[in-house]
Amino acid sequence: MDKGTFQSTLSKEHFYMNGLLQSLVETTTDAISLRDMQGNILFVNSAFEEIYGWTFQELINEPYCLVPENLINETKKICRQIKFYKKNISGYETFRKRKDGTMVHVCLTVSPIHDAKGEIVGTAFIARDITERKTAEEALLKSEAKYRILVENTNDIISNYDLNMKKIFVSPSVELHLGYTQNEYLQKDIFDLIHPDDVKTMMDLPQLIAVYKKNVQIEFRIKHKNGAWVYMESRCVPILSENSKIESYLFVSRNITERKQSEEALRKSEEYYRFIAENTADFISVIDKDGNVTYSSPSHVKKLGTERICFENIHPDDASLVCERFSSMLQSKTPINCEYRYKLENGKWIYLESKGMPFYTDGENHYFFNVTRDITERKQNEELLLKAEKLSVIGELAASIAHEIRNPLTSLKGFIQYLQPMISENSVFTNIMLAELDRINFIVSELLVLARPQNLHVKPIILHSIIDDVIKLLESEANLKNIKIVKKLADMSVRINGEENQIKQVFINIMKNSLDAIEANGEIRIQTNRLNDHQVLIRFSDNGCGISKELLPRLGEPFYTTREKGTGLGLLVSNKIIKDHQGSIHITSEINKGTIVDITLPISK
Image (cartoon, rainbow, N blue to C red; front, side, top):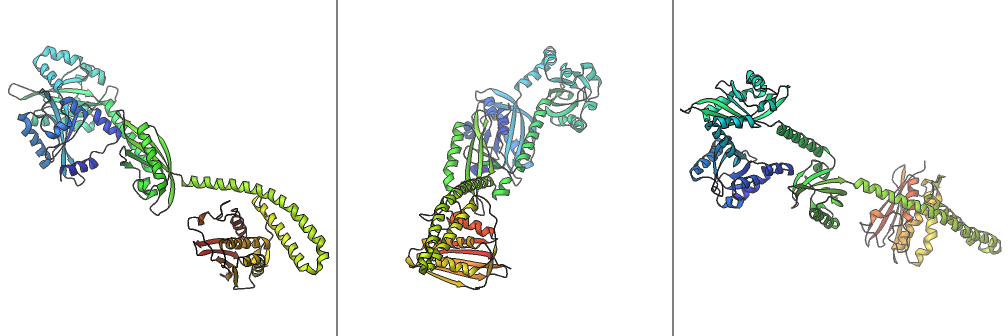
């Protein structure tokens, strides 16, 4: 594995951290660095550069520039122990060289870094500057007076134990942290105060120090005088005799209860919000400033079929808007909202609403949260409300139009009836005119269907007679355009239940559309077929200009029409009439080939 591939793999599998964790790494006072198995430096935090003075670039060119020459082999030996023995090294004290040439005493914690297969691919070094503490410890050993001044005034608890872990001395600060006076604390057995789960750690400590004869750092819980448990971080220092034998143990203990509580609160908070993110119906994701998704909630897979929102699935007409909003948020560092269409894996388009919120770390926004919601149903409801509003307006117009048309119709019908005896030799024409005026008056009445609900007065009617009447009415217009009307009725006796004039109106609307779609020398075919004992199919087909697939779904919307002089109301009224008659309308069409309208109606019993 080359360095580039390793670094990429390592960053994906081991160094992912959210904004908060990265902030902790960058603000800790410990120096953190990562190396690969060849010793090449991969990462250092800001504390590392502050402590040592070396920059990341300088370390890349010279990985061991901060290690004194006499300790380079020692450092490489540690890496070999990690590589071959998979050991974790904790509390290892050594020296490092600052860029200005001064030496710094550090405590190292070294641990292996594993890849997804469990193989060791690198080493993590955490170094704490213990120069001051070591200086203090040396000062304590050299001067009893200075030792007491330091012990009695430090905020840490300094205590001294014999080889059997019996208390010899404890600093006055024990009362501040544990509530016991010095005498009260010295009279108690240390193992009576230690938390049961931490007793073994304390009991193993002497043996651990005896083996390494070096400082050992441990964490344990100890009981406060009020019964509460206090978290302590202690460094155990072996006090050696002249012949280098351990005489006693010196403990420098720090109360880390507040830190532990903060860590626990952080863990619970992260767990809580992760639970919300992984169980919400919204799509939650974390995206860096380059557009890379670093986290996405499981709801993406449940709804979208993919682990994240894919930019290529955004509707082409909306893609530029999404990019513009994303760039605007990065520049203004303010939340943004964006609506766009998104294509699912099954090819279906849905509407999404995304809210992007920048997340700041150290004054810079490295990530932003994206909360996305499926608003398809809301959009559909808005469209339904819009259609309902249109229908309301249509109803009001229909009522007024019907009133205005009825007045001249009444006059026309009256004059024809008045003149009928005078032209009795042409009574056939006057009868047709009166019949058509009655039908027009009925059609005008049907406009009121759009204004208020009407009760149907159905009766059994013969289907083929209705078709014949419609053909007679439109035959003259068809002849003018040289359009042939062909009918093929499978069963002449089929009866349906319905309002005769309403059914006529539907057939007229459909045939008028066909006549308008055919320029000349065309053909309109009317066929009926009994589907079963309960339904009959009426098919109107023409060889006109046809309708594109994109426009077909919009047929029947109020005021939507493909005809130059159309109103877009014919199919709307026809759909309602057929629906009221318990039937259905289905339209298929193809450009330059024609249109087929299939109507199914229940057969009268």
